[in-house]
Length: 177
Image 1 (cartoon, rainbow, N blue to C red):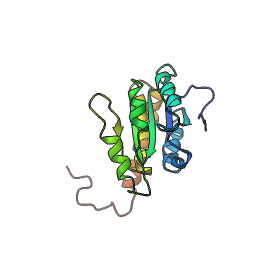
Image 2 (image 1 turned 120 degrees about the horizontal axis):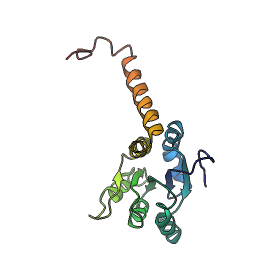
Image 3 (image 1 turned 30 degrees about the vertical axis):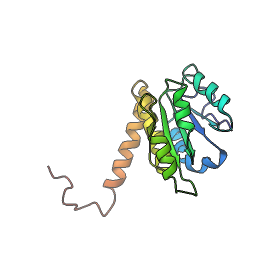
Image 4 (image 1 turned 135 degrees about the vertical axis):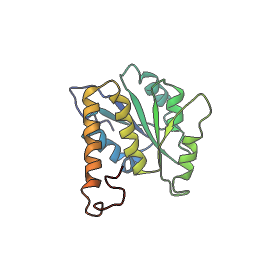
């Protein structure tokens, strides 16, 4: 599976999944990256079934111009840590819910990286995937004014949606200083 949001621009974020079954969890991240105009590509690479391909991809990540890699993995969830072991590019780990332990195994596998091999870890499931995409955009926004403006607009719309909620009016802290 390989998808790039814009053939005119090289991908800035590599989104990697351990298997096609992880796509449902990672789909929200892809939607947010596209909405924010962040070019990305998608790969299925397994830490256990394709370790040589994974190592090669991670080693090339910086040369490919990626600002970060988002890695979704379930179960033993070695994918994010293995990517991080082979690259300086920041790796954002998304624990995918597993049948056996509802994703707690994935979370612990990703978050408990040994000192010296960091992986930023997000919530289990779709919320974690979306937050990883927003974090990727925030990383890129430090040097890309276009991404910064689109991320700011997203946050403004998000805030306005809360303020426009009819149940917000009259909140005891609304507008109070």
